[in-house]
Image (tube, rainbow, N blue to C red; front, top):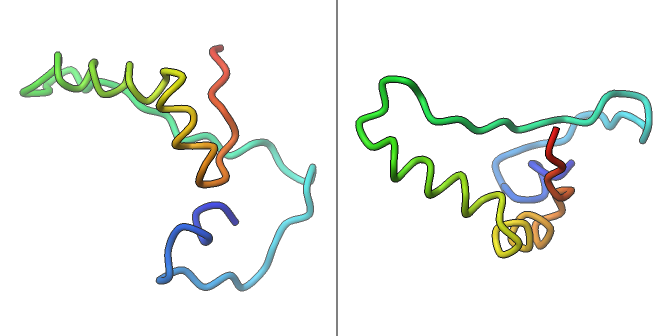
Length: 67
């Protein structure tokens, strides 16, 4: 429901009960053929920073846990 809450173009047709599935993960990575690998790495670093996590939490996402 988090993605649906951030877009007016998504229509929710069903909802899975909490705990009925594994957490949904949105991975990020720098592609091997990236034309701007340093910029991509900087962006990923920001996303995983305390400031970046606050933005995710503001929109209803759970904070990142390093695996």
